[in-house]
Length: 89
Image 1 (tube, helix red, strand yellow):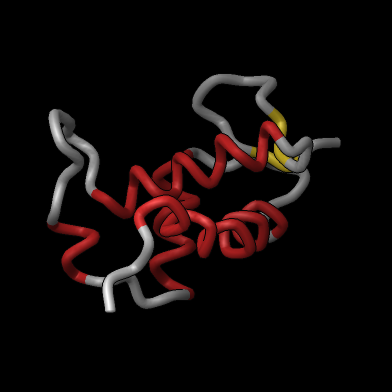
Image 2: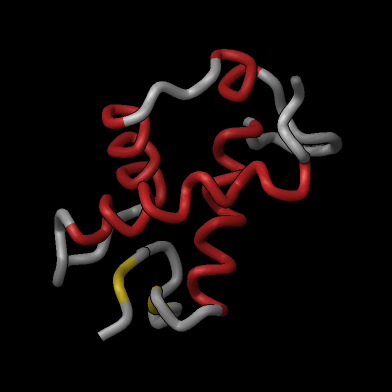
């Protein structure tokens, strides 16, 4: 059964939080956070090789970025410095 498109990225909420906790209080670059997630969780090959429509991001990268977006909006992550992801102080 195919995953619901609208909820696909939510599975990365706890993984992204754990990744950022692993280096807290130091921030992580997005690529480091994604590498941490891939080391801890098996990511479907299709999500790594298929790209979003009209974009250069893989489905996996796009999902992690959406997860971060909602965690920032929820007040759990900081949006203080571009290119660095960290927990909210």
